[in-house]
Length: 202
Length: 192
Length: 234
Image (cartoon, chains in turn red, purple, orange):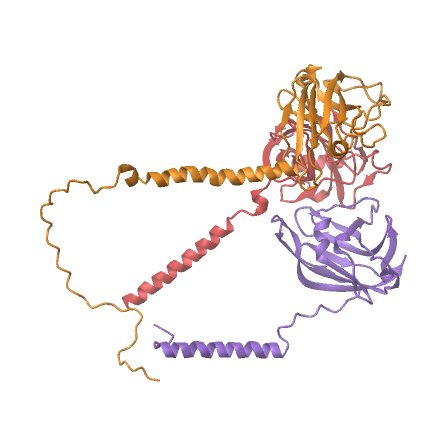
């Protein structure tokens, strides 16, 4: 084992370590989605959550086997096999300028799944014709069709922006405060049908 | 310790020899057709599940239907679709993953005209697939103008792999085809 | 081909050990300085010219691209134009003369649901006279109304009371500014317009109304401009 050989092994090992470090550093480089992701504000149901450009206060959550939006269709929409409708009632108030709630509105579960709020009805708060004007709270619903077995520790993620582009827009994440036991109880007493009324001023 | 020969001429010779051998190998591979693009898989009848990173789909058929749907003629294919993502997937994100063609004639259907309806509520206009929820669906694409749809006998629906990648101009991550055909389903056409 | 030089070739040549070079003699006492000092002036030594150049170029390097980008966004209409406050009740905007005639509160005309608590229905009444044919086209293509309060909150027009019966001569403001028949307002003729907003009651006292319109018919660069009228000016 010459000295020269040992030096070479040292240089080789150092190179490998540096390459691995470069690889690791590259992994941490944020993606375009992360760079322009909406700016999130967290809070709990039952109190206003301030997302700066808007505020949201979740009032209550209902489970139902069907929902009905008289504005878009006289028929009610039955939940598919194994699915249940989760209807989240909330007041949304813009702060400074007119906003629209962007799609998808998400209902997130503890095990990392997220479900998109219904976009086929006109009346939910994420309907395209619903504009949030500053200082004028709108009380209405978001409706989600979710597999029963995924119901656990739900939270609501709402994004709002002045146009269709939601990059760097305001976002509120509201913990709905419903654990598995409470959801089980709500499933047993789920309504046959819930009417999704158009948003009203609050 | 040095593996390579010491002399500069010997090194040049060694390098030349290596390039020569590698070149000859590639040339041989090219001559026997080893560099050709793999041919797409032969069409299979409906009923076999195909699975990529994004979804699992079983085209159930048994036929494709050409029918009027919302003021245009559309080619409809029935199937059972499950999104494998843990997040909702916009239906338009599936556009590039399907490559439907009419046969004979190989008239391609416009991939961006894809529309999905759930068979349990056909009046709803589906914009998102929910994670890991299996739905019986009707996939449809706008039929080309003219006689191509009326005279076609078969739909060849190619399903490719999917990758979650940044777009070319819009660098945000989205689902795109990886251009590798996983399955081609052949369905006889029924004029509806 | 055998190498002609019998010594083996090596890339790394280690020089044979040598005796260290002889130390230089210690310098002798410095000679007396010449009469003219050879040192550069202090501002030269401190690189003042380079520092000054950097001080000018750095803000320019940041500022010029920012300004160019801003001009582009303003020209494309992506960035909202800053509204010019109008002294009194009349002002001109992209070739048209605008007159603010006043605001009307709570005039639901018995249509639909009564106003919710804390919400006010505001009608802003304007008279507009396009100066020429291109001004009347720009009005039809682009005019827009905003209500702004003292805290900077802005409201767009509401369609909540669109079903109210308006006087026949009132023009349309839903898609650009037009006559009662939704056609372009004839150049030189005066047209009455009503812009309708729902605002919280606490905004009413400090309201201003903004009118926006394109100043160019170039679809790539419409260059919108805006004027603003104080609600209590009329």
